[in-house]
Length: 245
Picture 1 (cartoon, helix red, strand yellow):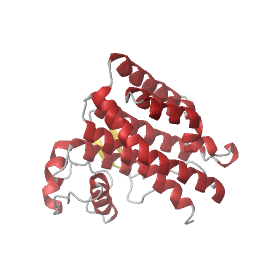
Picture 2 (tube, rainbow, N blue to C red):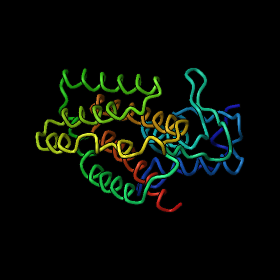
Picture 3 (cartoon, one colour):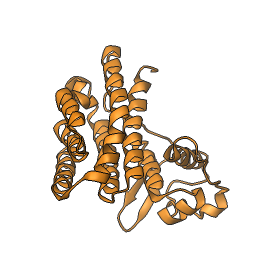
Picture 4 (spheres, one colour):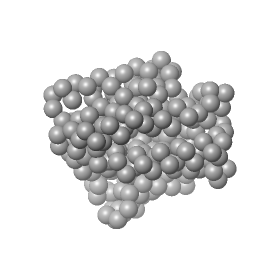
C-alpha cells in the first residue's frame, strides 16, 4: 500500500540547517512510530517534494539515508518500500582504533572544506571529456560494488575526476598528493571489516555518487555542492559514532 502523505501531518521543512537530514529524520520517525508500516510504499518523489516543500535532490538524499539504515529499499517500477521498523546502521568495520578514527575524521574535515566547492565548480566548468571521465569512474565504482570489492581505488578516482572537472590545478594537486588516504576505508584493517555491513555501506556510497554525478552533469551547482556535503558529512557522522561506542 502506498501511504497518503497528507494523512501524516507533514510540515514543510525550515530552510535552516540540512534539508535532507530534516526530511530523513521525519520519515524515520514516522516509520519507527509505526505510522508508516513495514510493507508500505513511500509516496512518490513528487508528492514528497510537495509535502515537505523541498527539491527532488533533497528527497533522494533523505531516502538514501533511510536505505543506509536498512529501513527501506527502492526497486525500479515498484518504488520505495519500508523493510523494517528498526534501524540497522551500515558500519563498514566492527571496531576501529581511536587513533585511526581521529585520522579519518581529520581527513573528512579537510574534504568537507574542499569537495563541496570542487563539486560546485565542476558543475559550472566540466567539458565533454570530463563528462565521459566522470561517467566512466562512476561505472567503475558500480562494477566494483557488484563484484563485492571495497572499491577504494574506484572511490578515490571518482572524486579525483570531480576535482579534475573543477579546472583548478591547486585543488587537483592537493587531492593527488593525499592520494587514497582521502578514502576512510583505506585506513581500515581487513580483519576488522564486516563484509555484509561494508557491502551495504558501499551500496549507499554508490547511490550518493550517482546523485552527485547527476547534479554536476545537470550543471546544478547548488545541488552539486549540497549532495557532496551530505555525502561527506554522513561519513563524518558515521565514523564519529565509533568514538561514542
